[in-house]
Length: 466
Ligand code: SF4
Image (cartoon, rainbow, N blue to C red; front, top):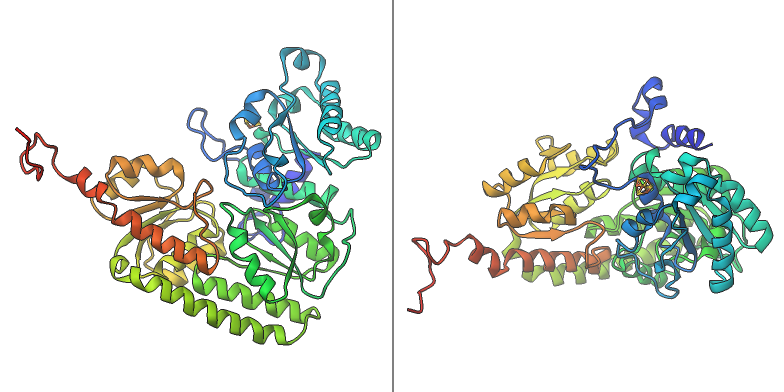
């Protein structure tokens, strides 16, 4: 079953990365195996949990040894506007006895206990390596528990050894398509119902976009999965249009929802002023094509004009300090081009951007933005990153938390733009926040002090007290 699902995901029709491969390579899937001890980027289970845990009112139960949940619990800043159940760690904490006798009974008991104590609208049940290896059948347990307790129990079959984080994202999407989407009906529908797919509300980014949509009269029927409620996702098949935010993570959900329910979609970004405006225009266009009032397009243009004007006015004071500063961007996926475009709008020069997790389309967009001579980085070792920063080839490193120590060692300013970031960078307000954070980081006096000679070395600016 899992093998079949993986094959299906690897031949995803809308994924250009897979379509570019030969038939033989597609069958092989992603055979790159992480090196033990140097593994970074999470396993398939981690990817599945990241994609679904922002469904905030559901229970996320991990079937496996305690370390699987212990290591992945609450490591992203996906925020909730209500229920906090998603932040409670539930695990079967498998022991040696479970491994010898099988963990299915233990798992069933855990579901009963969760239902009695929390009475959630649904339980997502995650498979991990150990129970998958000993043959625990989580699909059967989920089915039996659903029937016994009259509660949706959704098996998410993405054990860590199946592959990397991105595969886990897609397998989580498959679980939604197989067991959740289309299982409930919404209380009401409107001609402006929109799904947002692949947005996780990290640091509250969705909340910087949703008010703008509300001002246009666009209703977000479901965000899959940032700040989502189970019921919203279950009834999301009635939306009129969809926007796919992170191109690689849940492309299968967008494509299959179009195939099954006729929901047209486009891929867009909320990062940067022009990309945000382009996304709003696309949303309006798709909704009008599906029956929304025609004046939505005009109202969208008027909102864009007001918001852009305000955002540029707020950015203006920072521009002299940022103009010409060189940024090295080590991120991935859709951010490899959407953040590039945001940085260029702010007057920075992007000296390199990584495309490790990007699609062909992402690469084309980077080339469009930065020109054919763009420094596109496939993989960059920490040693090479350190060399670049030490040799002053960049003024700031913008990357994920794991790279911060390289920047600090090279005494170069660092800004976290990945999932652990503390600030919301989406939408017009987010762009202003990003620019002000880059400015604050670049002008932080600590970096000058760090680069100065030590008090006991010649050339130190500090006068000794004695
Ligand atoms: S699912 Fe497997 S690879 Fe992932 S954390 Fe658990 S044991 Fe490790």
